[in-house]
Image (cartoon, rainbow, N blue to C red; front, side, top):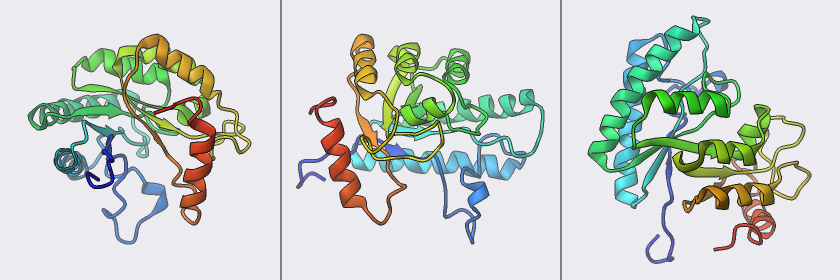
Length: 226
């Protein structure tokens, strides 16, 4: 990275695809902090700690995390208690590692909307824990991404950018038929004084990474220069 003049903005610890062999797509976010299996919850914290170690090695200031899907059909209060317990341990580890955690709402997860995330951050209220605003996820959840940025404001620690059509959770190259208003998002970010990084998240183009990068840069660089 140094030789190319690049820096790592964040380490993504949302998934753990090597945890299960073979990997079942239905368990993309397992093990999770809200799993009924105590060993899975313990292992997810270990995954977070490993990501923090990697972030330190790369010089990345942020690790993005998520909470998990409510797969076991238990009461919401049970999931919330597990999540709060896990986050308490995670922020202690983040303090020791000297990195921030950016929690990302995901479609279909226990923490899915901007309101869900704001309530969680209000409850945990730790300076190491903030928000990773994925603008496409916000749109899929029925939120306005620009308003989400304003709601989360100083708690924003990282961004994921991609386009979305019809509020369906499939990451599109910006400018190729999606509905996200990136200019409005940029204005909202300026209004709240966000000066952090943004990652363009286009894992949906595994066979066209070069084209995805070029086209996304072409569409976004006039709005997010530098």
